[in-house]
Picture 1 (spheres, one colour):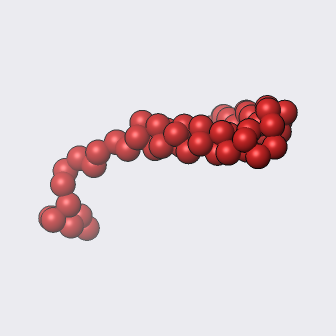
Picture 2: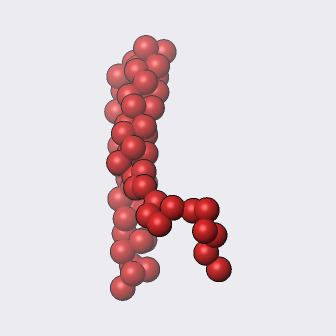
Picture 3: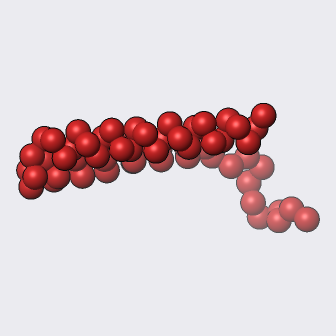
Length: 64
């Protein structure tokens, strides 16, 4: 049963979450770059890209 105190439509926080993740990735990349150099940042970016691609493939296969 629906709670009468809740609003009818919930706001969409997806774009805010994506922006927050992007800002966090930028400062994390910057800290890793300062501490270890550019190569680990590039490796980390490739690994994150790989995991996102695997997640996309997995989610698309579950839909089909």
